[in-house]
Length: 207
Image (cartoon, rainbow, N blue to C red; front, side, top):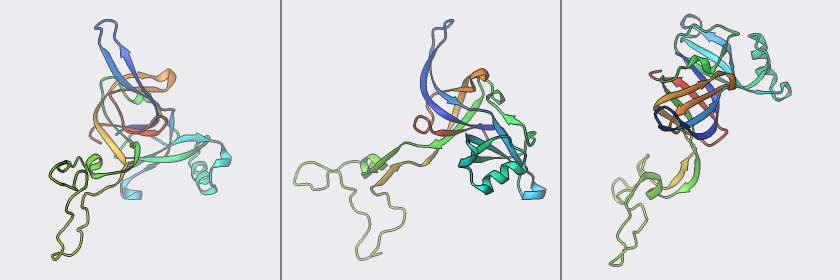
């Protein structure tokens, strides 16, 4: 089990001079994440490693958050914490860096997708439109959402218009293209969820 949290900087292309292949990659800046706490099945009921990220000045932390970091001897102030489920050889005080990953390794990336606002059923759920001729008034409407007499209500979970995007998405099957430890950069082949400068979680595939 291994993972790290980084900031999505955007996409670029990497050119291979030997083969002439151009690969689209997403650049993720992942600064060293200190291990705050190691949880075990005996003490907490499950195995996990808690890491900190998003460094901020001390004044921007609440006293409980600052106390939690101080209790585990973490240098610096970090706004957010994340748990990586599963057993690990990491210990408190150790830093998780991009060197934990290798080129060619399969990973999955989680993030908050682009928020697109209110959208209709055609855009949100890929509905087909109705006929435009013969006096039809059902061109981009959702159509029937339930019977009138029975059950005289709308069932929960009916696909309707509403907010599109802004949800947690996990993209699986991605591959690490390149690791640049000196710059704390992780180059992942393909696109990952979320807008630029948003935080994404990179974990090994199968976890």
